[in-house]
Image 1 (cartoon, helix red, strand yellow):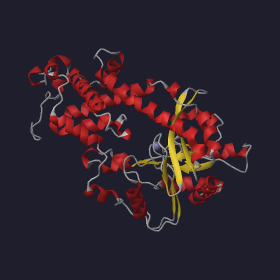
Image 2 (cartoon, protein in one colour; image 1 turned 180 degrees about the vertical axis):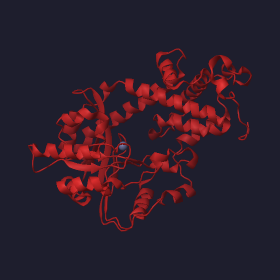
Image 3 (cartoon, protein in one colour; image 1 turned 90 degrees about the vertical axis):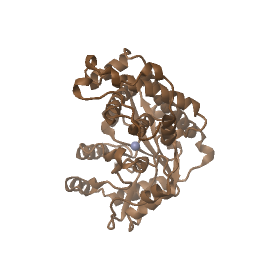
Image 4 (cartoon, helix red, strand yellow; image 1 turned 135 degrees about the vertical axis):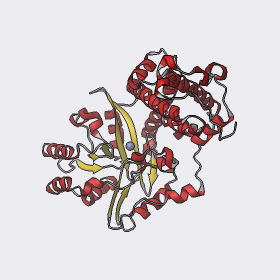
Length: 401
Ligand SMILES: [Zn+2]
């Protein structure tokens, strides 16, 4: 089949979206083609899992969208390189902040320890039985003593593998019968038609087959929920665009259900991870605490809270107040809780074709947290004696200790 040729699934004007009025003549025959993978689908799959960058992509990646020539301080303690090489990222950061002199730049890949210029970090999933929630922690390290690191390394590896399982649970759910509880719930939440559900089910089955066929060459980072989204975007050109859009909405709804029902008890407990990390002199930050509010009352031994994140700007002032209150009554007065801001940049997003980029995610920039300059927030921070420069210096000295 040529690239240009589009498979018309069904014409999706509103009258055709209702179950009984489907124009069946245009329907892709699911039964016949069930599980038969077309060459263009194999190619789409290989494109999606590929970690290779074209020279033109590399050139684009080192070019920031804006240059901040006045910025002296770079705090970058929450960001995800994904599969983008660190030397390219380093170049981009330098180009973004050409005159910065005070820098603390530590990658925090999900459940994968990575090092950059003498510092290492990870964003790890863990489980808090005290309030029955999965949460995340940012762990940062200065020099790492490999001999002492074995146990935490095993914990991080286990977490990575266990978290990756969610993709299989998502694909199995999507491949399930249209009458299954989760599918029915997602249909109810989104209102998509049966043809969309059938289309997604077929694609999910094919993805499972292709994953199994390629399991030996599959990069570990590719095994995540986003694979489904990226694959659908990749086959977009072969189908009526509208069915892909609806498929994405449906997949997202199913993903939310799978995520919320994922068995969290196989994650390590938050307090256990904090204990192990402290043995290695880690710095520990709770990112986006508003995603799991009770964490503020758990009394965990941490260095700070992230009071601003691109996806949660709403509670910054409140969170700063919480930090100030907690410091008043804190036992370890010498090590107050610090205020952090994380940009949560996902670098892989910047290498995706413009058309399918998640605009809000691809806009993020490592080291860029405009809230530091917000007049309201700045007022509270100054009153509390906090500035970005002070936070960088204080946290660095804790990690270098
Ligand atoms: Zn993150």
